[in-house]
Length: 238
Image 1 (spheres, rainbow, N blue to C red):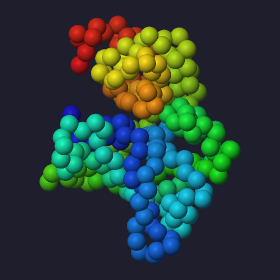
Image 2: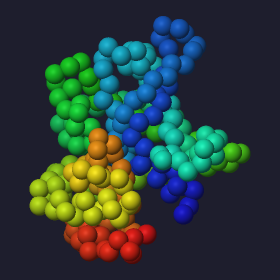
Image 3: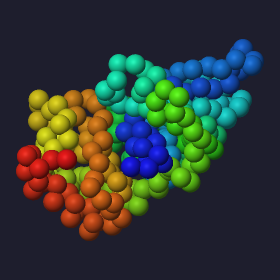
């Protein structure tokens, strides 16, 4: 696996991070806060944040931010051995709210309605550079063009695929959990998202990414690999 692919896997598999903004109240100091996010159509982080939050006020004053992500489910106990990714970006308010809401609320159903019931707004992080640390003493800068991958599925296509799987193929989704060794005691996992390299499942109030064996770019490709995975015996899982 290339360095760029490993960095992209962190970006695609982590759904919250530390957002660092420039403090408006204490000039010159950074301000860190934890925020959930999911990829938007461009493959870049999509945030839903309150207009009253300190980080949102900071962004209004200076949109240059950083978002730091840690590898999910690390095997190493030493945090310096864990893969992590820092994204330098310009935060931009999203005005295509309906599309953003569809993608975001599939990943975070508990937040549904925040943008029209509460003072929350969508922001996209337009990436400038990425700092990828593979482990102690292993760090490098990467460009967004090397790492970020746009989603080939439109919001409408994604809705059709995800809704169809959740409504008609629940057993297959539970099997995907078993293939990826995702704990799923309630057998109530649902699909939340998909891109060319994998899918995201909502399991026991947590998001989990399941990688595909090959890239897909069309609905027909997606159907083929989902059927293939549903028929894969557990003794043949990767």
